[in-house]
Image (cartoon, rainbow, N blue to C red):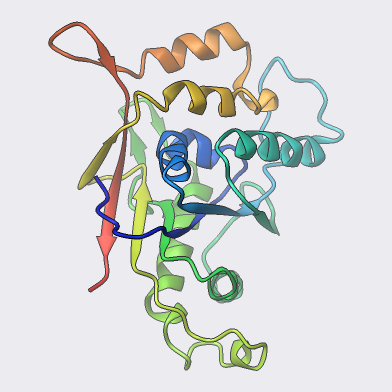
Length: 235
């Protein structure tokens, strides 16, 4: 478990609406229940993401923003910031890195959550979305060495955005996890948050069945749910 002696400011930086809930929704509500403050920074608005049962594509950006706010409210998340990059076309580069550094310096989080950029394959069943990997790489490149170094993007200093020290990075969907949290108690709340994303999840009964099967059976026959991360603690 995390061993923080005080309340933390946490910024979850991922590619699409619904990524926070799918990747680490149980962990997020565990943190907010303990009094930690969580905000989101999403790099796209997910305009290419729909499910076969959803036929209203005209207003998809507005819908996804509303769904994300609904989901975040279920987890007691604070503000949601967006960077307006095109869904499916996110690439690491200096422009987006500067924007992420600027947001981190504005929010001043102690903890940052993102996606492991080295994870290409998921459970032998599918390929990790390129936007997920790109978001992770952008965030890691921003955190070190840019966020805490005034020589990177000096124009940010003119905007009053001074260097900021991040204490930890938690990479979700990790290739090599080094921390596993039991989120069994928080799983129903995670599912309630995910069900806000109607444009994404498809038929509710099928979705619930699929998510139920993500559980791990204990020796006594009970089921537990876990979320894994690669945790980096800066000394």
